[in-house]
Image (tube, rainbow, N blue to C red; front, side):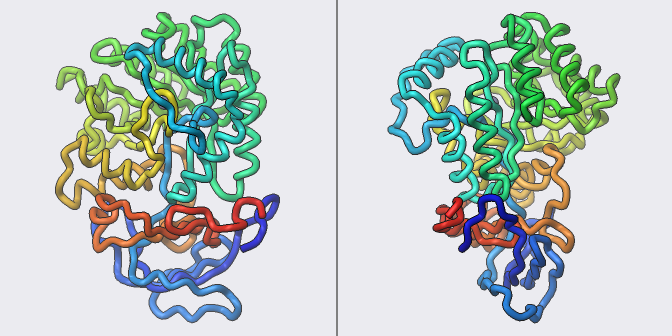
Length: 415
Ligand SMILES: [Zn+2]
């Protein structure tokens, strides 16, 4: 392996004997060879004779998936690589926010290092695309963002990272936060974040006008955490739809969590899903246990793009997420009671093709012309790979093997 920092990973190789996963197919295709030319899949077919001097990797008849898409996590505040966080945090939102701040201070968290650890961890498990929210608030200022931006730059050849400027402690309700958000977007944050416009800011119109105003001013997409339940969440969703439509931001808006879609009245859900689909607003669900959440099957039937994510990985909010998007597909399947292969495949789609659509990733897939970001994993069917989410994995980024069996290969990380 070679040093990668500052260099392009665009390499050539032949991946022999693999079965490509296509959206909507449960079994993986026939066994084929995949020729990668300078980071792009140039040929898919049988018995390809490789040009001289390029590496040949035997896929052994395993499945090959496009790189997994981690569509929602938080960067900089993970405790990966640090001692286990003994969670004794109260159940309300303010308890959780306070606990995180106290723990960050107590551990003297290095935001860049923790973001790098998380990116390496995600990549090792097969995610080659990741959207990470970074807290922008008046207590910590822009220090977390500065660290995460450095991590994004360092990993740019290995993972495509989108950074969301996320007003975790409130936007219009916290004087000074809007100015910080502007600075964050000028510094290079890729997406405008938002948070519970009614419950957090207690100012649904003002909060959402600010989020959409920033998106227009800086030409960035939007990703809003919406935890608000039932009719309150439905009301905020309507406001988001109205603004998306009137500003022509179709395809540029994601609502994360959208718990309200799990407990609205059936007639309201049908209307809301229809409008979400018409305005190409994506829904991100972690498929949480223990609370109402959107039905993935219902969303897909309505034509809404559904993606998924780990949310916090090894942080003070929750101990559950491992950052493995194959495992996440299993959790989506379990939460939705998907048992048939055809439904489990739908769960994986949220962590692959649908995630790519939500994040606006081009040239995605295992076909000629797509970027060669791939995950080779054993499984007779897609469902078997998801349910087992085995450690046995080969991760290919830009035609270059970067990880095997859950570990980054030696020297991949900057020599
Ligand atoms: Zn989140």
